[in-house]
Image 1 (tube, rainbow, N blue to C red):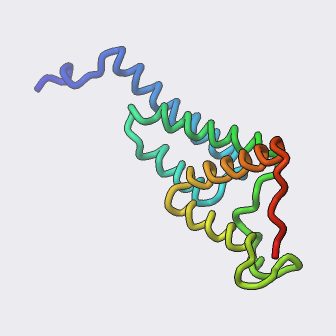
Image 2 (spheres, rainbow, N blue to C red):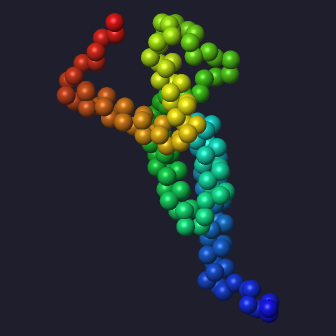
Image 3 (cartoon, rainbow, N blue to C red):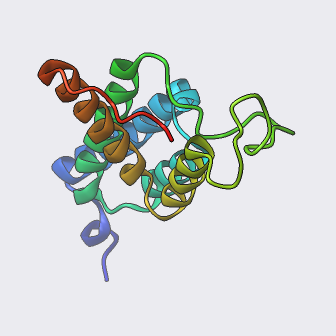
Length: 144
């Protein structure tokens, strides 16, 4: 087989360069804003940036950007990962094994291991419900 048959056309070469540049920009974006994501989300995006086929690269970058935009819009982010040595069940707000905050954090941590986007969707839905309750004037149910 002649060597010329294996050579890329100029258009194919351009496509290859664009793919490499796109993956590189996605990695840079992830590196620059990784503090806004959980470790499971970071690992998910790092793996996907490397392994996704060329056709899936643009949708992946859009998902990453949308997730980062949601984290910017949230302002103070929910601490999904406790600081090293921190125990979820300890502290002033701990009331026992059914502590809502601790249960929610553990649930979000487990969901992030399966699919990090679930955590973002769940927190967005919860924020939307809180805003809706405020607009409607519905008071939260008092704790028993």
